[in-house]
Length: 261
Image (tube, rainbow, N blue to C red; front, side, top):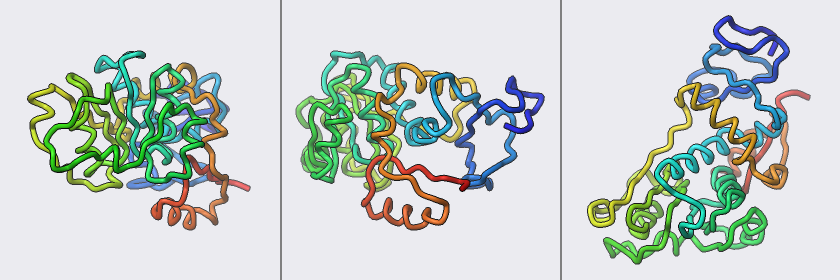
């Protein structure tokens, strides 16, 4: 940081991070070498994380952490049973797999990419299943109770399947819509099993909670092998190509962008 606003506790020269708040969407600066942002958007880089590691975690890893924390707050504990992660080979999903496994959960990773099973197991997944198994039988309003909790990065039919197979009182933390924005479900999982659907918004988290989340990302929720989550490192000139590959489902894990030479 070159200049610090009066409203923060950081000083010029401190390493900081800023994300969310529609930065790079409604506000310029998502890929800038330098940017001017409101002081209340700034989080001091926690001890134990380098700037590169923090941006490898990025918004995807932050959202994964918020999902894990939401399940913890709902009551999920180590040993409760299998925890499902859908869209597990993506940036958010792979982070969730690594975090849940590192904290002792039995993680079941769901992915449409069969050739990524070995990689997901290396991240800590105890089991790897296909997306069809996670989605289940859409003709049934309920399925056998299976999941003690779930992190859903997909939405659509997959999220509906997760809800049908949650154990009584369990919850799914949902943050994705690559499988569709409509969730074809019924009220039965909610009124017969008391399950919960928790929406995860990483954009407008209050700064105090954002800071606490990053502290956990530097400690107990830190992915044990951050570099293994990086599929490649690219320059700004390669961003368009990378985005096309992501939309086509051809990338796994995280892509790090170098904003300067």
